[in-house]
Length: 201
Image (tube, rainbow, N blue to C red; front, side, top):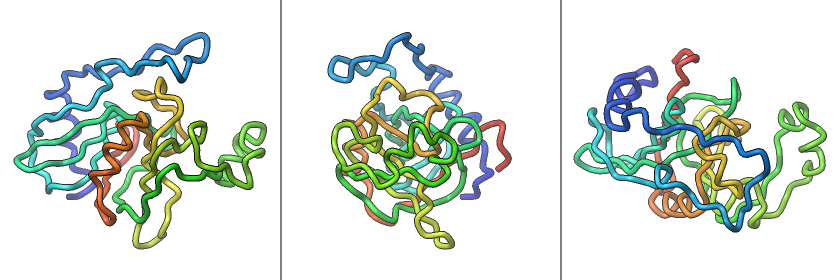
């Protein structure tokens, strides 16, 4: 499937979801991680796609903050996700090259350069755990040419950020939902990150 195939993005998604996914309102104070409740519209659903896709792929549409795990008979399990902010989102075709539970995290050199006050303190890494930015699980995106791209599909300790463009390039899910997806996805799975409408394919 070529990366510039847009019918899935602009027609099927809009028709099936009716533009219902919207970023949550930004709270004036940081929500409480223990009491935050994921809203019903951010829960996974199974739906039918207009176009046919091979079973067992991950497709990400950043324009509707949607991740699809493709199923037989044009069905898909859709998760609401957070994506990369601004030009940090990188479209392309990848595969799952590693999977880790409660992964450790180290910010990239680019992240530290952009925001040293926030990221430099973690230059030597941060152990996995409930406060780790990668959350409960991580799927590592690789390409044949580059190997590890440092892009991840992962959980988050901040579930209220789902449904918005907020990350440094990775795709994030609510922890309980990345655990669900992680259990479904085998090594080597194809992953397509479609372009934002402002990006060229």
